[in-house]
Amino acid sequence: MSPKKRLDPRLVSLTAAGSFAAEQYQGLRLTLERLGNGRGAQALAVTSPAAGDGKTVTAINLAGTLARGSEARVLLIDADLRRPAVGSQLRMDASARGLTDVLTDDRTTLDDVTTLLEQFNLSVVPAGTGHGAVHQMLRSARFERLLKEARERYDFIVLDTPPLLPVYDSALLAKSLDGVLMVVSANRSAESSRRRQGARHRLQQGRSAAVRLLRLLLPRILPGRLGQRSLTIHDS
Image (tube, rainbow, N blue to C red; front, side):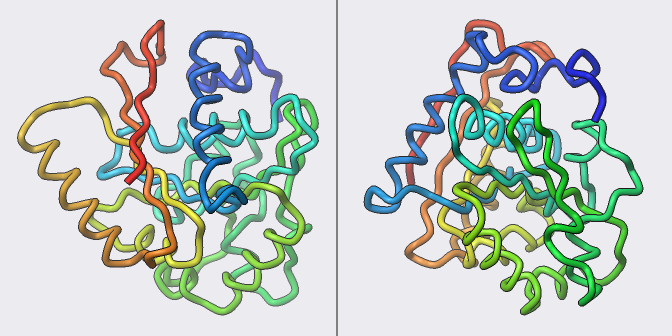
C-alpha cells in the first residue's frame, strides 16, 4: 500500500477524514446502523445503474468511514469481477490474490487473500487472479461459505459489485446480503432515468423482501471534488 498522498483525492474518508466531504459519509453510516430492526446492515453491496456513477469510490469511502475512529472490524471486498477497481484505487499489488482465488481454489482461505491496511483499520479482499465463469463463482457454495465466515469475523462487510446494467451479478448477490446501496448520479436526462428504472427493476428481481435497498444520489460536480454539496440518501 502506497502512502496516503498517492490515493485518489475522491477517497475522502481515507485522505481527508475531517473534511466536509468525508462527513457526508457519516450520514450514510448512521442510516446503515438503523437498518435491520436495530441490528444494522452487516453485509452491504454497493452498485449503480451503469458504469461511471461512482460506485467504487462510494464503496471505499463507506468502508473507510465504518472503520474510522472505532473498534469495528470492517472488510471491503471487490466483487466486481468483470471490471475490478478497488485494488488499483488503493494502490495494491495487481498480482495480489483475492476473491476469485478463494472461489476457484479449495486450498486458498480468506486469510490468504485479505490485506489489512493498518493506517485505516480496514481489511481488503481484492478481485484476485483466479479465472472462471463469473456468474458461477458468485452463485457457488464457496461464495456462501466465504460470506458466512466473513460475517463471523467482521462487524461490517462492504462489497463493490458490478453495475446492474447490463449484467446480473449484483442482483444475484443481493439475496445473500442485508442491504444494497445503489449509487445514482444526479443526472436528470431521460436516458439516465430509464437506466435507474431498469436497474431498480433488475435488483428487485434478485433480492429478497428482507434485503433493504438504499439509493445514494451523488451531486453533479467537477470530477474529484465533492465540495460543499451533500449526498442524498433514500431508503426504499
